Length: 373
Image 1 (cartoon, helix red, strand yellow):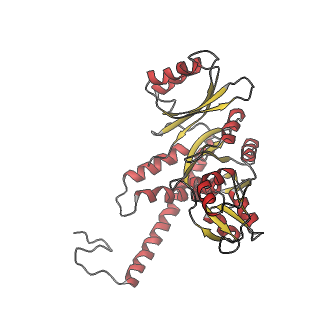
Image 2: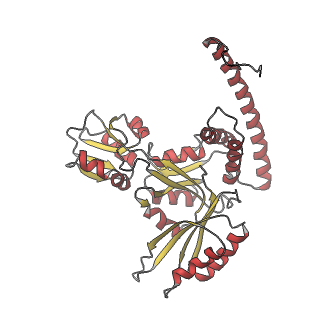
Image 3: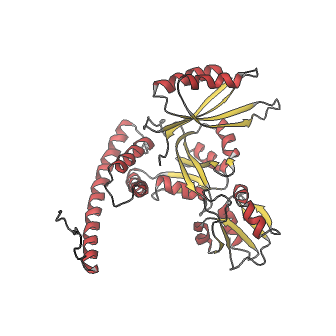
């Protein structure tokens, strides 16, 4: 039997509350000392990176650190808790080297802000933007080091504007994160009587279509630039309600009239982390990677089939295949493809070479580590 502090055998009497609190305080002081040792080492790493010209943020390295900790977690701390704890630790250490400026669809309280905080940690410099277009512009122009943009929702499918902007942007994807999206009906006053309009981003309104049709059939559904912008406007007029996050409700002092009104209970949105080529080199292989492409094929019979043959021949799986009109007036399409794997893997590299040969247009949007659950 272990005689470590705080251990007790079956039937042993638990220490009293003051004793347990003293032990927790002692452990907290030990943790703080260890975190400062880690921060000091991170500063040394930063100095080496400056000499080498290496980027401060390495998404594949952070993914490997978290994967390793998850694998050796002895409990009772839940393994799912490891990632958010260590992202905050790494965020604080990264901020000692240089502040990380992150652009996202604002204002404060959007799900995009939550995704940015979840991915980079809270030690970031926020660059809230008024539209997805502005996120791309700010990141491309260097006003932000990274951008966070929604690309796909489990209920409504792809975010078309993000896909269209990827086509002509110099930015590329270095990471992704997904977020459970819980929509709440928020209002300046309690109760749902007298609501004349419900404000939200068009995607959020669509994700709550069933609930709104049942409970507020006569209220206007008014699209705005973001859910948080809807919450800000609802705070100015008691006849308005917003569909937004709890964070937005707290930010603008709104009451939750109805929680979790999304039609799909497991509603999730996937976000891409984008940056400029001069800001970050493409991440190296992490062991669980995704390669995103946009391609088009010649206008001839069997062209789409021929495009997919190299993937089958080399055993490369697709996790997403979307088409978007090319807006040429000729019924031409671009195809957005997510492949499982990294170009450093020989079978993926060969498949990409042959795929490029079959395409009229070929662009790698990024290769990056993906969340593993």
